[in-house]
Amino acid sequence: METRGVLAPSTAEEAAREYGEAGPAAQVVVRETAKAMAFDAAEYDERVTSDVIETARDAIFAELLVVNVADRSTFEAWLERSQFDPDDVVLLGGENVDGVVWHPVPFAETVIAATYHEAVDAAVSTLRRNAFGRVYRGVFAEADGGEKGSRVD
Image (cartoon, rainbow, N blue to C red; front, side, top):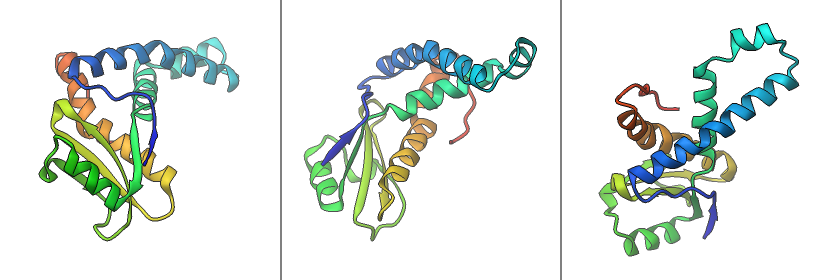
């Protein structure tokens, strides 16, 4: 089993804290990207909105989530040893595909998983966006008093 990523929050509070810490990084990434695109001050002020920075923060957080990569039998053995029930798994992709990537979310009592045949990097990225949209976005909306949207990336 291969593990990718650095964020594996075990509580909603820890997830919200990590998400908050991604905010300054998102601002720097957006500012430097706009500079590389030669935005002048007026264009920057017009185009770089709080929604743009929030989207960058969402993407940074999601792309840092820990994802396990293995074959189906390894995933099933992990699931059997874990505190999760098979009913806790949200599986994206085909049942008969051998490669599986997954991200457990203990505080939400769920595991988001996706199958892949050859494109493991694409599966990892898809899984992270789905974990963010299906679980973390709602957690952060609650922490913000329900202000965040409910789209699934």
